[in-house]
Amino acid sequence: MLTRHAHSSLNAEGRVNGDPSVPVPITADGRAEAEQVGHQLAPLALELCVHTRFQRTRETADAMLAGRDVPRLVEPLLDDIDVGELEGASIEDYRAWKRAHRRDEPFPGGESLDDAARRYARAFRKLLERPEQAILVVCHEIPVRFALNAAAGSDELDAPERRIPNATPYLFDADALTRAAARIEQLVS
Image (cartoon, rainbow, N blue to C red):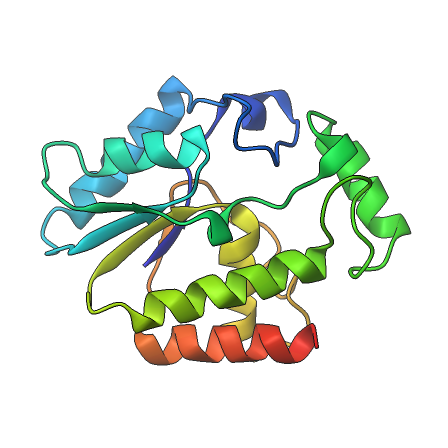
């Protein structure tokens, strides 16, 4: 199961963050979102929770799993895209930069969307190698979007799903995650 982190302070401010060392907590609304998902997940026997190095994914996982003893694993391959010099920029500036450049061009001082996609595909393959069957993955909008679109066989990673809401779980079995990784690799090769 993949989910984007809960509503964060930078979501509220409309700014981007791709540096895990920058503290970005979830908001009170985000905590409530994550707790609600936690209630929905309570009947499931989760064997592992994977989150990224970002504070907002860790706090989301904490709220979703409050009172449960589920092992945790930090997976940097699922970190948000490194936007380099656009760190802290507005979402509008980030999207304008994306529109003006190809997917294989790195953000100034950061990584390209294609490089991030390859990283996400590697992360999905690592998850598939794990022995646990019921894994909650708390990550970011882009890896969830890429996985959804790729698993469905889309010809582009950013469509048809374009906006992934905060704290909304998406179910993936091993076959779907395998399809996602393979299609991502195919689209960015």
